[in-house]
Length: 225
Length: 253
Image 1 (cartoon, rainbow over the protein chains, first blue to last red):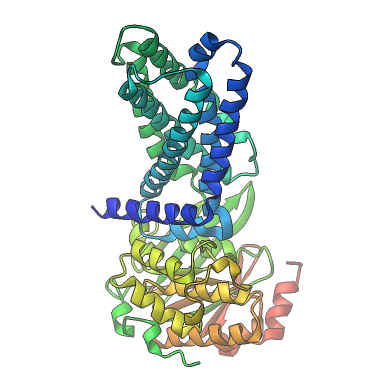
Image 2 (cartoon, rainbow over the protein chains, first blue to last red):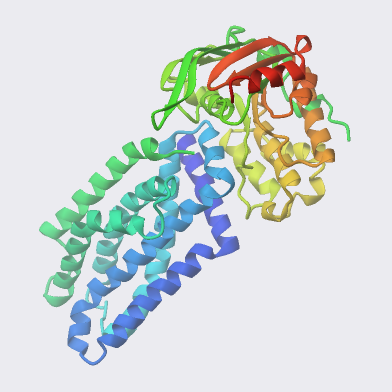
């Protein structure tokens, strides 16, 4: 119960800072919208290809804006050594991980909602066939992505290897997750199936579980003041 | 400005927990970073309530020692106990009794002092964090700026908020790593008064400082490090600043 309370305190702090500065949301929204806009305009001459490629293009936007989100939320902890203040508190390191993961997820999901809305306009892509299935698949992909991104943002932020390095580490790791998610969405909207299922869904669940558990365990080792 | 005993919430006798164990008991502490020895076989025993000045040239190992004592860093070798608790096994319990003032403020610049202090107070399960924060900010002369963002503060003001952060949970031991660095005269006077009041309230204080004369004036005992080794450990009133400086400089830092 105390851990949940501490997670809530940490998330509230992150959201308060974000609400005040709007630094992270502003940046990741602009980047995400820019990506779907540029690619959407590029494919606008061929609506069929655009509709087929929509899930993949949306994921490209989610990925880049997500990585920026991880970097920004962790940078808040590095300014003026605030992370050391957190590490001095009598709370478990995994609480810090959980809080940062939830903050990242909240920001990413909010951004994804806007990016997706913009993407649908450009890609002639309708969610009407299975809106809940789409949300479920994207959410599952986001959880795995945020799990691994939060872990590695902590690792990279303690080194001098910043500015794109996080993307270089995280993107290859989550590739299976993105492929599975994209295939599931394509299956959902290009066949008669109304609910996701099969191997793709199993891969999403498996990766989420593995990434969450491993990151939770490893986070303590990579967190340095 | 008077900094009366209320800066600490616990009377001196209540700090002798558990079982009146020494505040710090370090044996054979070693720390190696990138194959470079920072601390070498350091023994240090600090009774509860003692005020110790930790002196040494840059790179002597003062900051590393304070980070190890605060459980932020793990020693490469050796054993460390604080208040009878093992730093390896009981780190969370130890952290609840430690206050650390470092080179950096460890604050969130976009939050106000009050928001910062309430946030950290809640992490330490302080019962009435807002009241405690306002009390400390009043004592440190920052009540009028309690709602302004910390990023708008001068170095001295941010340092005062940082001191309040370190004291929010009424720690039994205060580790201060060059807290006077960059402070103006009024802020220095405030901090000196805070340290004296904390010592009077029975708190254990370990102060790493470059000002030898100031350290000897404030502390009961001085420990001087050189190249990660303890070269002097003696009552402060038996030591002379010139002699310490000579010992620190001899054979290079």
